[in-house]
Amino acid sequence: MTPWLLALLVVVDGTLCGFRAAAGRNPRLFLRAYYAASMRRAALLALVVAAGFLGVTMAVRAHDAEAFSAIVAAGEVMVLVYGVYATVVLLALGLYLLGHFDLGVLATVLVLGPFTLARPLVIVAGAAFAAWSSPHPAAVAFAVAGASAMLVFERLLDLGRPPWRGVLTAVHR
Amino acid sequence: MTPDWPELSDLLLDVDAQTLERRPVRRAAVLAPLERHGMREARRIVDGLPGQDVLDEAAIDAVLLRAHTELTRLAFEFRNGVRLVQLLRPLLEVLRAVTPERPLRVVDIGCGLGFVVRWLAAYGRLGDDVELLGCDFNPALIGLAERLSVEEGLRCRFRVANAFTLERSAHVFISTGVLHHFRGDALDRFFERQAGAGARGVLHCDIKASWAAPLGAWLFHEARMREPLAKHDGVLSAVRAHPAPTLLDSARRTGRPLRFALFDGAPSPLPLLRTLNTVVGVDAAIEQAFLSALGDGRQRLGAFT
Image 1: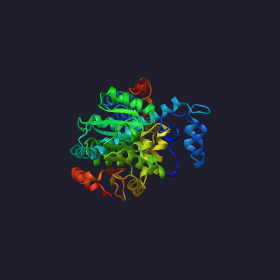
Image 2: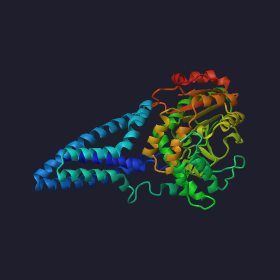
Image 3: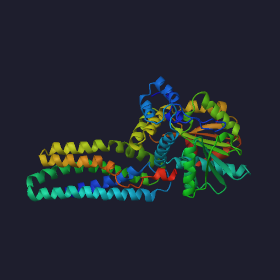
Image 4: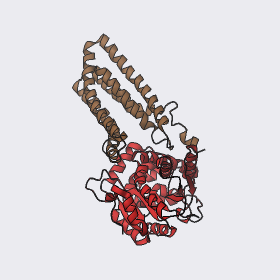
């Protein structure tokens, strides 16, 4: 269960990264399709990352039961830390999307802004806590690799042909 | 940072307010005030701009376009359009009843990429008898705003112009994030010129000065912006935000015959919900009607003087 929950969190976080990566790079007003394209692209990349980690975890399970248990124990800690973070963010996002002006501002000011800034710290804290709770080398490697992947994830979205590439040049001909 | 530090975006554009001619920006002229105030981060940003004696105009435009595009995102997130329409709709409703001229002209001063004007055209439901015009001194920003409005089929226009000297005066002046760019005498002159331009209502929305404003601005610009100039000027804007008494004193002293009040200006020990306030100015003849049209929003408006 734990590996699947972690994979779900990776995909949720990756999809939100897709929104953030596209935001502030297109001055148009009607951006639903633009954001949707970026979030779809990011979700796919997150699925690939999650599948890679699931694959490695399953391979470890087949060969080393002790290492697998340690990874799961570390994963449980990460699910707890990242799960709380993701729940608060998604609740705030829901509040924002309700459309009520004051609730929207509160959701932004109290959660959506500060939590974006805190994301790298939460990722590192979750991985450090997991490694400390389950100090098996395989679990530590799993936590460090997972956290590193999510820390560089937003940068990865700049590669290839993201939806924002050339937008400003195109409208500012 | 202190309120007397200049914003980089103000230093990087030099336009003659009368002729609207863009003048070359000398590196030394930009660096001098930065040196004087010890603005190291700003200095780094300017050092990164190409051009020897004179800064490269295209590079300046590119930076300002990126910064304003990022600002558009923040304006979306903080629902600046909704914020303004709460006051603009009642004001136009009142003006419709007392003014025979049509269309009612709403002019956005220092509109940048025209987010608010474009948003009002798309979602404002202000009525077909309302003309929306965005004015700014920056030709690159205005050019892009115009192209975007055409591309997205929006009923609004943009001009490189001094909003106070248009051939046909505005019924309503609006602005977002502009007032803090004017300090001391310049703020007085802003309200004075506005008074001379003959509008019957004005709505100037800007960052609300509070202990939390610079902290909040830093947090959101770190979290949301990529362009170093946008981060720098964004935080500085909050530091430079005028306290309510400064705004109202200047407006009331020099902005007659309009009468002024502040919307969302009430001080709060925990200023999280009302991060912006709006200087509202109306012709005395429509003051009561405007207050009635405002409905519940009236509770958030101070007294007109």
